Length: 431
Image 1 (cartoon, rainbow, N blue to C red):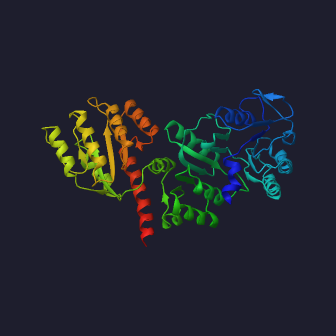
Image 2: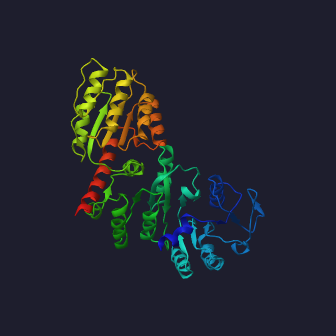
């Protein structure tokens, strides 16, 4: 039921921008520009009696002057005018409204009036003071953020702060994290957190949900637990309740987004048996200490990989897990090890920890990983620590769906979160 009710918010067929304007850096201008620039597939209706057209799109005096159906209206006019618009939008049959209007000091009571007007008219409203809503798979960017281009993917973000939400989207763009949906509720929405979570739970394009919390309600507690039974929920909240209920609680927004990459990948959980491979044979002990407090099962190096190394090089290699493949060895040694590990019946997950050196080319690692990524069912997690070339390697891997990170700790913690969530679900299914 919620899926149908909130479809006009996330998958509208037509969108109106009330308060659309030609003046840059105004909400009405930026929302309209973002809808156009991001390539919204349906009709867009600018609403403002001052203009005949904006960006060569016909402009209408009111929504009632639009002949065709409108599913979603983005309201950018002052909040006192927004209240009056609710009955007009209801008369037009608009089912979802996003109110970006700011609440000025001394006008806080208008928030309640707006909420009551929307509720009275049966409108599902986000706002006021929301940055808007994004659903990449319907090419919807109904926000006023500066950069309209958002990488499509499978991570949904729900937040309670305009600034945090905007920053998370910017960070995701910069670090090539693909998003499915982004929603920020605003001051007093008629859409509840539980309703949004339920919609995201059933959304096939969303594989993991990152929730940045400011406060907890009973409805939200129940819905988080309910959603987490089917789809991983990563929270940033520092709530005792959440950890007791088995939800993944990240220590920061950055960590939450890192963890989301493993869940957003197309790989299914196979188990905790993990082989770590690094190009620094001197760092294996430190890497072992990093992995020691995780739920990763560091298995013995499979015999087939031992044979691969012995056949490839006369040099002595430390044949323990983490497996150190010295940087001075030819790149085909590393490639051969990765190939064997990716198809070994004794391995569920492979972690590649690479350190950039003058003797090594990060592109060799990237190409080796990509050569097996689509052919193996195993989870492969990569960290590439170094300068510009290593960072570019991380981005290239992420663009191809591989969970890749800039420092080793992030790769290990992210795989640990993946294993932890799935192992809990597996135990629940067995009991």
